[in-house]
Image 1 (cartoon, rainbow, N blue to C red):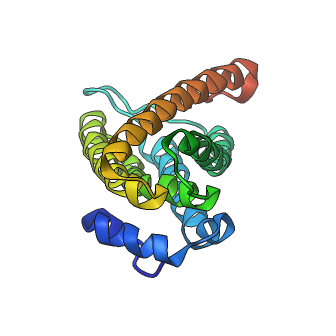
Image 2 (image 1 turned 135 degrees about the vertical axis):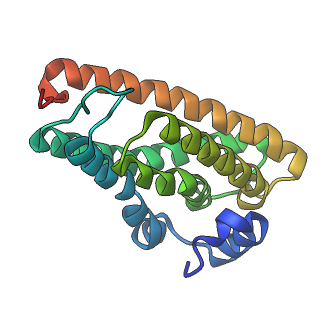
Length: 198
């Protein structure tokens, strides 16, 4: 796990090493996930409270630090729990593809595939809509490349089935994203929404 960033520039070799390491879910959380999952909420907090979102030449829109803190803590917990739920769903689907992968294999696959998304969240410390959108698209493309390379290796299936399985994983990811958005709306409607400074 010392070379955890290898997955960004040499995914095939990094996945082989991760498969050999055979980390448990707990080890993956401790060695990578709890630290990387801090990046999005911390930098979003900084951006929302100190920099603010600006569209065009308007004054930046900022959140109160109390509101941003509550949202950041909730986001951090959602990332930690969401990754595990996502991994369980991937493991459940693996049976369809005759995979003998464990929940730990599925969790490592999901967690490491998200690394570009964790790292690109650093840009939210100074949010520029066009730049953040562009960089996020690049991070999503890199995450997809990593996921497509890792699915056959981590799940122990051939490459043809790996492509089909990866498409199934992406479908589940989209469904989970919509579910998170719906849950966010429910929380916002019940008093946990953002409080703006202006």
